[in-house]
Image (cartoon, rainbow, N blue to C red; front, side):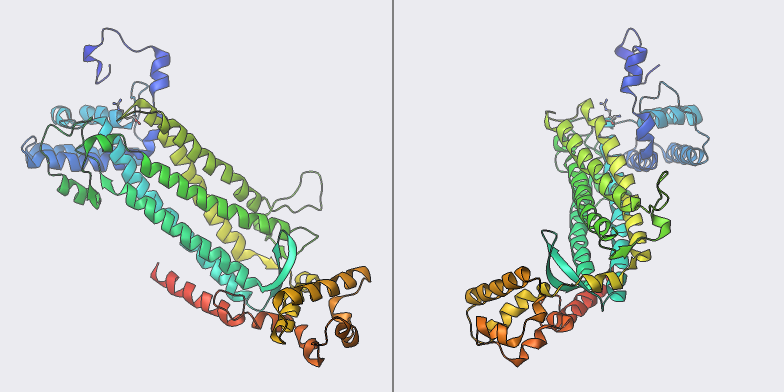
Length: 457
Ligand code: ARG
């Protein structure tokens, strides 16, 4: 027996029933479905479809279903097509008569999108909270590593010295932008669709503003056809999650490389590493590898939904039932990924000695060129002069700081005694006072700015 089988002369094929069934995954929406139904009963009562007595009975029944579900006492049937049908069936069984009026003026088309919008808002809030937690762990790292100077890399070649905390803060700022992508997806989800009916708008003039208020929506949809066919907020959600995943993956990649024996810049805590079943010496950064690996799912889930949606004409088609699994999967996984990354950072050990040993004076070549510029040489010429000196060092296997002043003066007579001041890591950092640079003051400002933001979150 189906709630819609009045016009059918035989029942669905068993395989069709299994194929059509979304309950195994959309039961995730039960809380939202019940909240939506409570708001709907209230709205129907306000226009006289329900008496207040009946309304109370329905609401009590709905709340009982949720309680039973949480207690693991609900038995779903194979014939329950989806969570919406299941709740209605159970309600009829529990309270009889009054339940049969619940679907008045409502369609599963506006019901499912209402539930999904509510769920999406809820999970976006918690993803945002997890990003903030990660940001706190990042800022904590930046504070405790504030005196460590590391080689900064471009093309994975040593480029210029930077503060390790400058590196950590770069992670903070990209996460700040991820938060605004999450907020934007939230805004797109924050529209009430209940009342849109199947396509044309409900046949009953319910007060949608009150429903929106009750369900916590800031906006009420203006066009019913737009609403029942709207899955753009899901695309935005999956895109925002992919963006978070992509950037976490990049930082995971850095730390994986830095944790190798060759670098030894960082060491993961045992609690966030695993061993090898064969090689006893191995300690693998699996937590970070999984963070990088999970990113495939996030992009995959976005692509999966985009591909599903793109061929669907206006308004609702059953294709849309395929929107939920990619959503649930990405939401579940990004939650874990963010939690794990925060823990990896909080427990990370920094290999101060290995970092210090790896700082090569060639990292100061740009500062060397800047020295000549300050003495009056145009930068292009200075670049050439220092390039020649570097070439000479490489050829004669000398370090940049081992060249005598006399030799330096053979390249340019602008070199003076003060050139030895260049060979100070702290000096190189201090010279980058420009806003956003790696100078001590600049990084301090970044951290103060971050503290302010996090206090408000
Ligand atoms: N389970 C369906 C979904 O997830 C609910 C909506 C069904 N609507 C319909 N007209 N068959 O999309």
